[in-house]
Image (cartoon, rainbow, N blue to C red; front, side, top):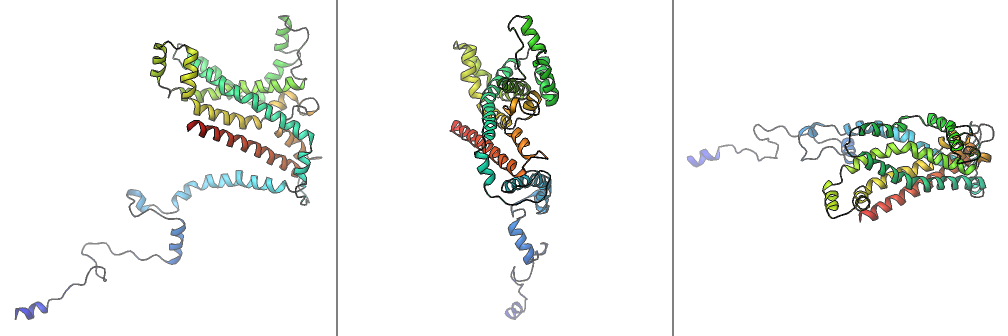
Amino acid sequence: MAQHTLDQVPVPPPLGAGASRPGASPARRTPGLPRRVLRSVVPGPTADAGGAALYRRWWLPWLWMAPAIVGTTVFGVFPFVNTLLVSFTDAKPLGGAYKLVGLDNYTRMFGDSDFWVATRNSVLYALIVVPLMVLLPLLLAVLVEKNLPGIGFFRSAFYTPVLASSVVVGLSWQWLLSDQGLVNTWLEKAHLVREAVPFLSDSWLILLSAMGLTIWKGLGWYMIFYLAALGNVPKELHEAAAVDGAGAARRFWHITVPGVRQSMMLVGTLTGIGSLRVFTEIYMLGGSTGGPGGADRTLPFYIRDVGLDPLTGNAGYGAAVSVALFALTLGLTLLAQRLTKEDES
């Protein structure tokens, strides 16, 4: 009888066979094919994610990145691709009909003496400005790093040129360097020169003056970079070196410089890129022609002359020169990265 009663007791089905555990949440529905494909391309949170990640939609991170992606595409990727395509045409600055010319613009560029003069000026600009801009702001940062009475005034004074407009600074330097300007007046009264120095009429002096303007305006900006880097150099190293008898110069070269080497690489890269793109300084000091006979034109200045002139300009040729400037800038950046990796190793 007992055996018969036990045989009549119903046996519950095993888990996974359609029954759910008491108190457990109902099983999730299998997503459809389009949603599975979308999840394979843009996956959502993993199974071990916790907290708010469990309730975050897969598209939310893309929503936050959308403005940056759109801005980079519209103002970076599209202009670059468009410039590359235009460099193979004879397009005009104001638009109109154009045709493909293949590599004619690049062939013309390599045989253009004015292009090589502009390239020489840009490379020379970088070769002179970059070393000075790497070293001088570092020396300036070392001088103003100490917490001395009134040091905040000097930090602000050194940083003031950064805040000024490049055009305003250029006009000020025009007044200072003109034949009747403050510099020539002082030199003549000090009997250091017999006649005015042609700062704004001699091609080489215009180029050197523009370099001085670039360095003067950028000192305060890169000084801030070095002040931040100097804060990470251990003071104990300087103290130990001073106890061992090392002078200020030896402590600078053997402790300070290695401690801020990464910042020096960054400053050199940024300064090099800026030097290859210089335009305002040459325009303000050398005039709209870029010095006498265009002898001081840099590559951006030359691009403006040959590619953007509404009457005689050739946008296709200007785009080809722009591509050459991009290749030169990219080469400088890759060289800086290589030097940085070698230094780290």
